Length: 463
Length: 101
Image (cartoon, rainbow over all chains, first blue to last red; front, top):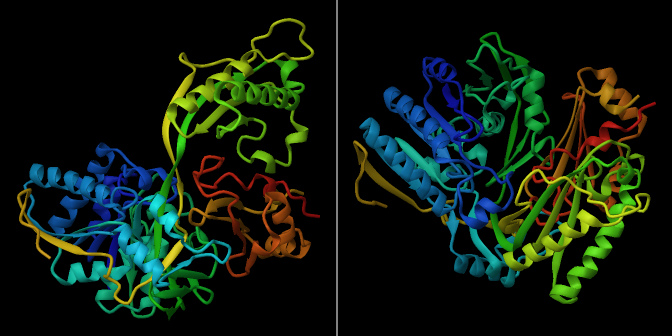
């Protein structure tokens, strides 16, 4: 039997100290924590910036590191820094070093990299090893690879297993599949792969498997011979068969099949029951081996953004909001063309909250609009920040004074909450890669280095 | 009756940066069966509502979980300049409003 703690949905989201303490008292074999996601969009990876701040990450990492060292069990962190690129792994290591120094901790550290050199991607694409993940997505061409600022691969459990086998007490890994972080130790100890993978999928968002996830928190999993069990050590969070089953569906395109590196998890025959020991027991999950493929992620620069936030409260204007927006956009575009030239590319979007801000032209209730106020985001994206700012300033001025046909005289149409009204947002990115690469060796693009950390001092790099 | 009056949860979310998935969940078999039998949840309807190609919309019925899942490509990838919902988590409103006889 293997028992472990999934600390929280993402390192830095937090957990209650009491929940962690109660979990550690139940003799886990390791603590795992996912630290990343592609949910936040392409900017973190494209720009190589951490998703969360130092303070929140340090708080969680400090408590987890202390707990793991006290209990003498491994601490496994995956997708470090948000997207798991080298620069984000290094950011996490810098925080780890500060904690280790403060707390005078010593341990064997493994660092697993997941950033893939572009030359390698070019070569793999040329050799036909890279394929679109979805049938409707195009083949990867060399121009797209060139435009992509950095590429990461989502590692499977094998690199974690290797690091643990070589005696790592703490593993800080780049981009990984969420499940791999949690199934690596059980697989190393010979657990049933279907149970190990399914448990990993269930706990990867921490307490999100509970009926009501009141706060981000830790959960526990136990893998036996023919079952796994998940439960919460926070008495305020109920874990039910329905909530666990529901979480199997979460963020997954298919409700039964979960594609992971080298395998497919099939939950169509899984049975979820309330466990007498607390939480939920799952049996009957199945697993099929597949050719070994790894998902690649990458993003490219897509221009610079500038925005203005404003409110509209004039009932006369709101009575024909659509007409107002249409005439405003037309006049703004012709004015912009006269300033920047009619062949200069830019994107201008009026995002009108309270009307169609969330669903855009797919909002089926646009025609029934009636309201006393809407929020307006004027959004300009162009090749340079200066151009985006120019486009925005013209659009903003046009919105401000565009005539409202039913009001006779000069009107000022929008309320700006801030001065200055215009905000330069900076570089915008977009995802480029929706592809998988086949690997002969699961560790091929995930090199591991080891360090002996002695009271916070990192020893030399070993391979 | 609206679907959101019958289901105990309707949600949308990214399944990766290029795919949008909807979960419609029920707390009893009758409610689940009623919606399945109504024939309201179809690829055609979702394709029309969200402006995607019908043959790329997949509808799954999960009887034991009492859940219906619908998965489709995103119109633009998550966080691209013209995107309106980076997490894809507020796209389910029109589904809540579907009328179930």
